[in-house]
Length: 448
Image (cartoon, rainbow, N blue to C red; front, side):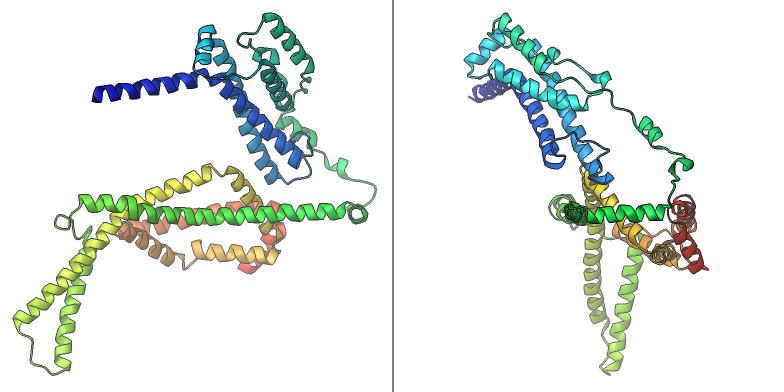
């Protein structure tokens, strides 16, 4: 009986896999067509039906990076699915087509297939360089049960309706070379301040300037919302992952494999020393209270019973702390994985976040920039920073149940802040001095 049920499961699985194999051409063409529709939707919604151009002046660089990332993904899906469509149509023969008809798999009409191929070519051809140009004739295959003459006529009509491919898109280097101008070329007859004033007046007198201001405000608002939401996700997702993994995944597994009798009470010597100090303090406290209230001294049996109860409490407390430290190690691994996964799937949000911080930083005054620089340098690489690093490292070691190695902590404090300070000074000299020299001058004056 079991063998028959198992055989039926294998037969149903193989039948489902065979049906999926027969549906490969239709599924691949549908996914490629869906990707092309999404590209056209972005063009119609954000670029007035035009090509998604990186040199567009309507959006900022970060927003264009966001659109370009989606465009590359959709183009990759469309091209891969077209290749899969061509390969699957090549391998399917007439017997497979008859088997598909017997299995009840309906195929789209040849005119619909050609219409979808034409639409996909029209969308992809806008973003295809001359080296990657391929004629849509290679994608046209003979539909099942269709005469050769009709296929040739449809193929000719498809090639006639297919738009010509655009010329080769220039590379980034050629664009940069074309944009580079000499200083003498930028000098005009009138001073730049007068020209900028005239340009500002032209913008203010433009009847469409109000719509542009509203559009810029909406873009800024959207960028701010995306950035704040992404920052909250970077904070909340790892914390929730840590708590959920510790409570429902790591915790039950560790509690199952470590019973209370076999569980080690102390993970390191520092925990044991702390427990002994706590027990000695409890004994001295009992003696002190006994002397204050002027009661008869405790008998050795009573003192031993009190000490035994306190030792059991301390053992249970440190056993729970040791178990929690082991759980923290594995729960932190889950948190790191969740954080890395969030960064990998949110490249567009990272670009928007970078643009958001750039606008905030560059919008600050020179004194505010200098104040923030001094604040962060004093916290991380300043005179009092070793104490903060020591507390931080001891907290991390206690969180993972590791002994606080004083030699390692002192070596870390002696090297890492120095390296961090060197990198920070190089950043000021290399980048900030070029972007905002007035902020660097203000920083030096405040630091002196």
